[in-house]
Image (cartoon, rainbow, N blue to C red; front, side, top):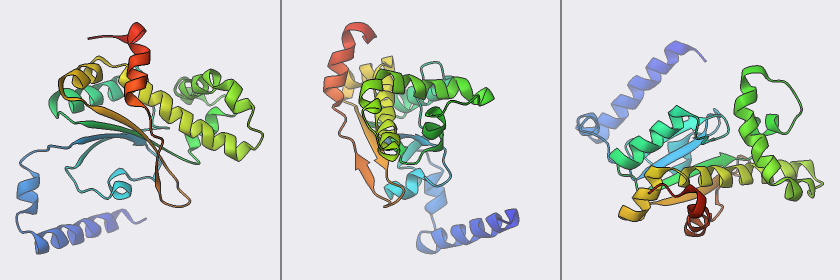
Length: 208
């Protein structure tokens, strides 16, 4: 892509917005009140606002390789803190996608240098669910299932945070696990049982 084309695209986008609402950017500059924190993958094919059909200001977005929420990652922890405690979002979505390169890399035995510590978090998901995954003979089906299980475990990591536990008490915040099917374009709700997970981890992870 020609980098200069991006600026032409931007001008066309600005003109289109102003043609329908002359105050669009003035109103956008007043602040943000998103209701959703979206945690997704950095994959260039998976754009958060577009696949959800929402506009700027509707979702606070954090993306990284394989939509991970490790408690040692100050970036994701800071995003959760800001979104929950300051923006007061009522929903947190962890969205993975089938044919995720990060998940695929974690399934293989290879030294990937600086990526090793990050991918180990996904390998830990595999270890936790080893019996279920090893029982799946079809590699494609196993790959997809690990994507789903990774989303589930990252939802659990979100629920472990003090901010989310307190926000559940204060205003009933919810955590959702989704998968984007790149072949069909459809969002799949994994129907994460938020309250059951919360109840199950509170004996060990209660922070409020």
